[in-house]
Image (tube, rainbow, N blue to C red; front, side, top):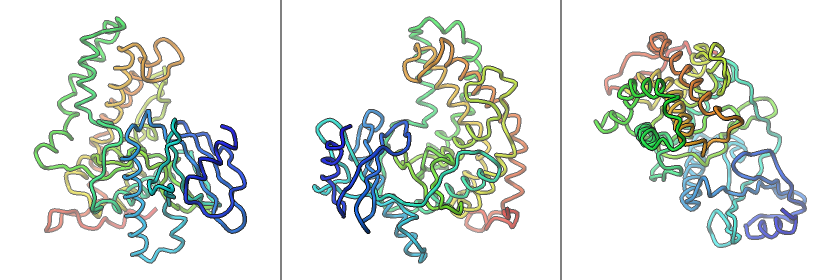
Length: 379
């Protein structure tokens, strides 16, 4: 966009200081992002175009984010945390009081830029521990949020819904590909009852939805120059979900020894050491509020997400590649089979995962909760 257009958009927000420049920032895949540079001591800002094709209810989206950041800020203040402005995102309202601005074609938002930060992308046991601890803390802070958040992407991690989509796609067979994948369809169906456990537990009143990030990865953590965690970013997908979402989705990508679309299935296996490091970090911070049912089903969560993603890739293959971008004719099928191999590998590690979790948690307390985690959480 032209500089003049961008400056006009910024002018509709309650920013302080004279704006000197608006320039592209980063390479976000969903939201186009710019850095707003101001004069003198005034803070700089981050201007983002909100992708309302993915997040159609922008009002709900921004209400969610403001509730979340306000609640985290109160937690930090109650703990007398230093340098809060660098440890919690702060969004700037538009001049009409809303936390977004519509220019007639696009939706925009502005947050305060946090300087002198860095990010990480490498997945190692060490970074996996940090990710687990950071997102466990994020969930812990939001476990008592006093407002009800909306679902920014409906049925995002609803496996029963995804399996229904697979059944419909198979019946329609719009691309004529079903015969190519009957073996995979049958394998998925054979495990469907087991893998929809979360939805059944919720209906039985044994499992509830909490506030989750729903996009757990090391890229979504901001660090200072010394490598210490500042805050969690990219809050668009923060919404009610089972805690399995944040736990399982990280492992789906981070604990995969191969690529998401690896055509050589020998490369694809579940890395149990990444699981152990991530679980240690996660339970260190989230163990204070999780129920026994949630903790006992963490190995199930590690299996759930490659299973669910195999279903989603297979649906798109059967439908003719209408959702995910593909590079060749059978790309979605290759993805689906790679995710299924990862699911099978995680399944083979389930006993080991269960034993590991039992080793690092205490006995249940009188209220049915697990006691404080044992000293084995030392790095």
